[in-house]
Length: 267
Ligand code: DGL
Image 1 (cartoon, rainbow, N blue to C red):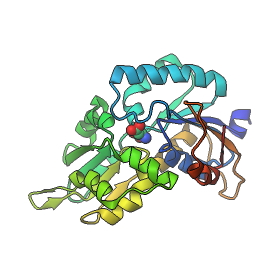
Image 2: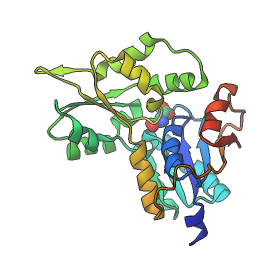
Image 3: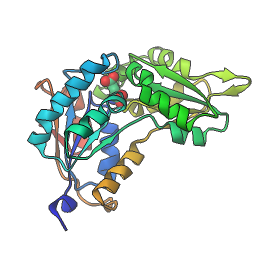
Image 4: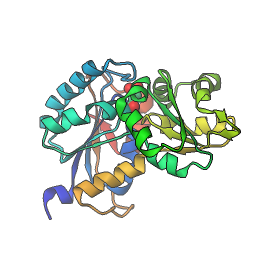
């Protein structure tokens, strides 16, 4: 057994703390993985960044992070980044990358009404990559793309324990609920890793019941597949990991409990 098989080193990256939804799924099946989580808080939010500047920023960050953390695999736990920078990262670095891209195929397969919404940041919503996924996998569906500049910020506030009003959240998700020729949205893709942390609020505020698709488990399976590892027993102790901020600032006190629950200490 190689050392990577015994205890894989993973670098999990997002613009902020939403990528913890992906880390959580990885942790559940690979508790012994050595994980460094990096939040690019200095660049947050990514949703409104211009594409060339965002690519340059993330490639530049990886130039420093990969030699520093020497991961066996990097998870880009961000749809806004993954739908843009994966080709640039894969051509520059030898380490494997697993991305997080809108779960349009499973949503189209699951929808009964044929009306699907994709809730994303403005950046992920407008990417060619996202449009290509729709053309390839959701040809028979009406797909409503909804880009929100606010929801990732709201998710971070809620995760820190700060209040966000129902009205504010309801206004952002309202465009995802459409009715076309008597058929209503029945499936919504959570195409931003921050949104699973708001999923309970979304469900409570939805004008009618829908299924929300969170791809985190599928990403965890992909990570295990690339590392050639089976899921570990759930009772295996969690290896302590580190959480880093690109700003070099201190983690907000309100996040201490959440980081600890995911086996992370401020790095
Ligand atoms: N968590 C990121 C995503 O999955 C985006 C949040 C942001 O930076 O706006 O798209």
